[in-house]
Each structure stands twice: as C-alpha cells, then as structure tokens.
Image (cartoon, rainbow over the protein chains, first blue to last red):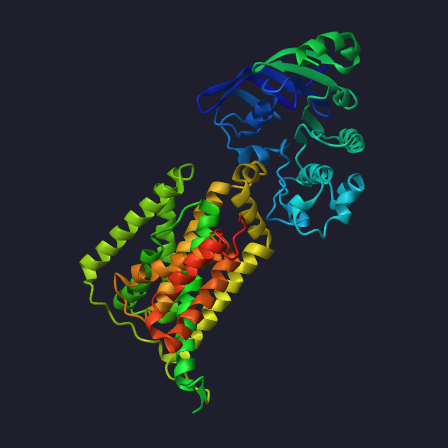
Amino acid sequence: MLDQRAPLLAVMDLQAWYGESHILHGVTFDVHEGEVVTLLGRNGAGKTTTLKSIMGIVGHRTGSVRFEGDELIACTSNQIARAGIAFCPEERGVFSSLNVEENLLLPPVIKPGGLPLDRIFDLFPNLKERLGSSQGTKLSGGEQQMLAIGRILRTGARLLLLDEPTEGLAPVIIQQIGKTIRALKEQGFTILLVEQNFRFASTVADRYYVMEHGRIIDQFANAELDANVEKLHDYLGV
Amino acid sequence: MFEIFGIPSAALFGQLLIGLINGSFYALLSLGLAVIFGMLNIINFSHGAQYMMGAFTAYLILQYSGLGYWPALIIAPIIVGFTGIIVERVFLQRLYKLDHLYGLLLTFGLALIFEGVARNYFGSAGLPYTVPESLRGGQNLGFMFLPNYRAWVIAASLVICIGTWFVIERTRLGAYLRAATENPTLVRAFGINVPRMITLTYGFGVALAAFAGVMAAPIYNVSPQMGSELIIVVFAVVVIGGMGSILGAIVTGFGLGVIEGLTKVFFPEASNTVIFVIMAIVLLVRPAGLFGRRA
C-alpha cells in the first residue's frame, strides 16, 4: 500500500478451477520483498487454493501471477519452484518412505542464498536430534511441521508459501513456529502465510488480506488490526 | 557322487541351478515391473513382450551388423528402452489418472501387437542364439558341473538387482523416485521435473526387461512367445513379493526360482503349479504380499 517499489509477488485477477468447480473468482493482491503477508478467511474461502494456484498445482488457472516481474501463469509447478517460490502444504507432506534426513534434503537447491543446514538446526534444534530417525512420518506433529518448513529453507527460494503452519499444534510449538517466522523475516525471507488463527497471525504479519468465496474482500496493515477486530470476528465467524 | 534324502546330488544341485537361473529372470523382470508400478501406477502387461523384444533385438543386431552378445547386452536394452519411452509419451501418460485396469488393458494390447508382429516376421519356431565364446564351457565343482554362461547369468542378475535396489533406496535420485511415488504433485512443486522422471523410469523398467531378454537368448529359444510364457509366473512373483516393492521383487524372484527347482526334484508333478499355490496362500494370509507396505 505505502510501498512504492514493484512488488515481489503480484497476483492479478487469479481464477482457479478444480475440475468443474470454480474456486477462485478473481483474486488480486501483492506481496513486497521482506514482508510477511497473511491470508485470513473461513474454511473454504479459497486461501489454500490461492497458494496452490500461485504454485501451479490446481487443475486450471487464469489471470496473472508475476514474481520478480516474470509472468508465471503459463509455467508448470516445477518451473515455478525454480523461479524461487517454495511451498509448505497444510498437510505438511512429510514422506513416509523417506527418513528424516532424506526428507530434509529432498527439495533441490535452486539458487544460491539458501540457509545452510546448521542455521536450520539453530531454528529447529529438535530436527537435529531426530536426523537418525528412520521414518519421517514417525515424528510428532510439531516436528513434522518443522521438517516441512526446514526443508524449504535450504533451497534458495526467497518467497515461502506457508499453509496453516500452526494447525493442530500445541501452544508451545505454535510459539516456536512464530519465533521462527520472525527470524526468517529478519533474514530477508518474504512469507505469504495462510491462517485461520489471527491471534497467531498478529504476532508475525505485516499486512492481512481477508478472503471470502474465492475473492479478497478486505485488507489492512497490522497496525490497523485493533480497529478491525470487530469486522474480523464477523468475517471469520469467531 | 553322494545322495541327499535319496536324491543323487548331481540331480539336486542341477535343479537348484536351474531354479537359480529361472529365479534370475523372475527377479530381473519383476524388479522392472515393481519399479514401473511404483512410479507410474501401471501394471505393465507388455513386460514379457519387451523381454522378447530384447532377445530379438540382440538377434537382429547380430544378423545385420555382426555385433555379438556383449555389444547387444548394452545396445538392445537402450533401443528397447527407447521404444518404451515412446510408448509412455504417446499412450501411458494419458492413463495415470484412471483406474489401473486401463493401463493393464492398454499394455496387454500392446503385448499382443508386439508378439503378433514378431510372429509375422520370424515365425513361431524360434531362432538360435549362441553362447558367447568367452562364456562357453564350465567348471566342475566336484558335486556338480556349472556351465560358465549360467554362472554369469546369476551373477549379472544379482549385480543389476542389488544395484537397482541401492540406487532406489540409498541415493538422492532414489529419494526423488520414492517421494514422487508417494506425492508427485508436491515433489514437482519442489522444482523436480516429475513427468520426465516418470518417462525415464518407464524406459529404465523396459530396458531391464530387454536386458533379461538378451541374457535369455542363448539359454532359451528366441521366439515370439518366450515372454508370454514367462510373464504369468513373473506376475505371480510380483503379487507374492508385494506390488511395487523393490526388495520383495528381488527376494521372491530368486526364492521362488529355487523353490520351483526343488519341487522338480522332490515332487515333479507340482513343479508347474507350486508358485501359484504359494501365491494363493500369500494372498489369503497377507493380501499386500510378503514385502507389501499396506496390509
């Protein structure tokens, strides 16, 4: 809003379909370099689909997704990843046929500038202890979430799409994830976060977009959060 | 000469050897099927025909270019593997989202076409292919005579099987393959070209079948139906080992070859059916197979 530079990610009139169902009806927003931007909204509002559409993993999409000025709407998801966007799915996507180390090292390094492993272990000390563990899916929910975030920090991607990283986790783990997101922001990562829990989001986000029925219906900065709490309760139905 | 349970040792070890030879082919072929099923979700019914194509390609290479067994062992799998890549790009890639049945029917139809074409041009009598000079003769081990070529087949099959297992279970490329088997969408979203990996995997599985075909050429007749005779047993091996299990394919391939050989010694009447009896029992007790992941 106040930022006059060209955004790192500019989404314009993004529409997406799963088979016959039309999920996104023209989503427009942008994310600037170094920002943490949160998509809020109820279940089924289209937040996850927005992330997946940016990543190119929905059935069909139209509109415009520009990243660092390059149009990505016609690209396949492996090309989008190679452009420098990394995705951490809601279901975490830890692979049961890979051990913890293989899971951590799975995403290929796409450009220089990723975090070295010891920095990732600084952020997630638990992961280091679990490296020898046989199966990725034998980890606790919190550890799986750390693994899912940790593995995309190595790749050199500068824009991280995090889909509900706090879902189903204990409060102490949620605090650790929040601390991690703030640390990543300090290190220059740009983060687009999907959250249902705006109390958590308020501890990390710079700006919010609110989604409903596949559209952005409102937006405000973190400083305006208090003034918008009433409205938010309405939007989110809490 | 000595006897074990009233069976002359030469007969016993002779059948054990035949069992190991058959097991080498079962293992190589079911390994290819397991790799293909794991990545493509396709039950590759043309695997036997592709094995046959390997043998015929070796034969044709010898006829037309004079290149013998050793070059053919490299060239034939590459050629046949390349035909597999074409099949995957033209046909199979359209079927991944459909039920297994479609892939099975398509590859079964392709097998009939490949075999029909071979029968049309070469007849069904079978063509000779001689053992390479360097592997003629054999070793007298005291208790039995071991032909060099058969020793080579067992050793080569073991090396290929263990090598493939190692690549899939212990390397980075193998981690990509295993992860893409579980969740191809996410692996692709990490920047890996999964469709190309799938195409190459099918090409590799088909090349394995062709490699087995070249190795079989000097032992069995090179004939259009050589694959369809073998493939039924190989499918039983895959079911017993567990669909898509690499280790299962290798262990049950060799194991069932040996069991089949021993059955020939102790109860010859059952030797043709023993594998299917085992398959029935395994399906009753462990429907996912001995090494299957999901019970």
